[in-house]
Length: 51
Image 1 (cartoon, rainbow, N blue to C red):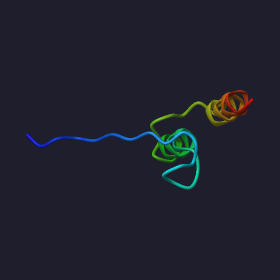
Image 2: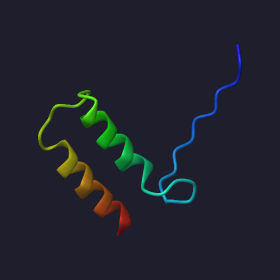
Image 3: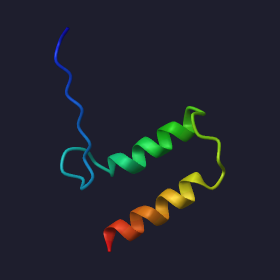
């Protein structure tokens, strides 16, 4: 089996945008998360993280 590399970029170093936020939006868009408040809570978490 080949090797796997998983990268999370939380400070915009490798990809434009926060990978956590982009992943959260992807999960909502794909229907994996259906909580209507999920993205708002994720945004608050990211605001707290930035402080």
